[in-house]
Length: 85
Image (tube, rainbow, N blue to C red; front, side, top):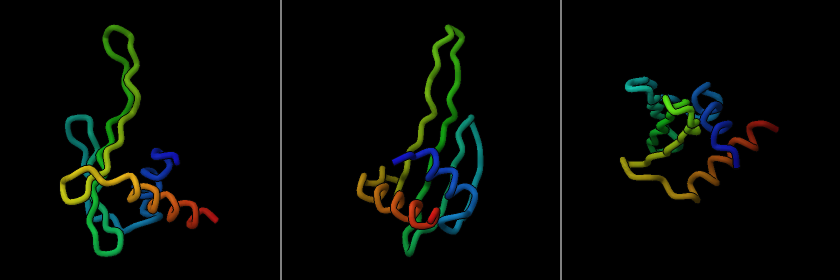
């Protein structure tokens, strides 16, 4: 499962209906709808600190303001794979 590819597909409106997308404080908040549920993907890009340490990109998927379950991500990944075929 590649979360970055899933995020990009959702951000590009390829998988689900995007409700809103906004960036503030170096984070992108992507709100989208899958069936009857509303989710929020929070993306923080990778960056290099002043000490030269690289922090990897971070993805958080929320449903009803709580972290979504791993099973939810797996189902969305299956949607992504089916869409790519």
